[in-house]
Image (tube, rainbow, N blue to C red; front, side, top):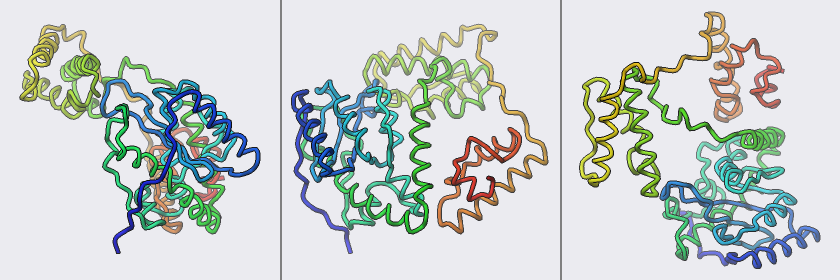
Length: 370
């Protein structure tokens, strides 16, 4: 049977500080009266359409009502965050949203609950929002606006409906997933995993852009290729900034690696066809700068910080990974939820398994590493 499709939900559009203040006052009073305890939040940004990412929309469900809040117009968002910190806050796939909110608004919730984490811990392999809504509600979500430009105003009705749907069904998912977690005695796993995510986001710092050009695949290049990669990466960044487009719309990372490799092996670079004249001109100038540069100034490969493992350590790593696979199979969850291979490797190389800060208490318990 085909999943159902239902009409758009009604919502309130909040795009002034006055309306936001009124909303937060109302929600705060309802929290005081115990009319609801949970809030459901999502965000939209414009990273696929502009050079500098902006927070463009906040979707909120609370007390059976839905709100679309325009952060491009509302400046006093801390009012909203104060209310959310008083509630039991739920998101889906919270890593991206928390990272965006921290970077754009300097806010990280006091506590957070993630339905995606809950779904994975209950054994779901398809844990995207649309898949879970279809599974639990038999409703097909329209995802056509997923890659839209959320900075555009006015926001089309189709995109407004899409935005509301991102929080519309979270309450149902929460009830079902919490029941499954409780039945499987996995609520402590969930609570620890959500807090671990929150702490991870909280502890992140903005990366130094000095070596930002060392993208995936660059480790296989020699100095000649690295010199071209570095020059073209910064050329792409400048070009994207001037055009106000994401860097990947100028050249994607794989294209950069291919161009650097071509220069390294054949001494030439070939830009994509049908480029605008200015891009061809500045690209050619960037290539020329590398050709004229002194090889002694070319960047070198980075040395590995991690020491090589011994035969005994490699055997222990394989033993832990096999244990992880076996335990995960019995529990019906993905092995990575019990710790990534990198985590287990790092644990062994740093001198043992007990007391590792890299694993959560529930992971240590399941793996017998307490």
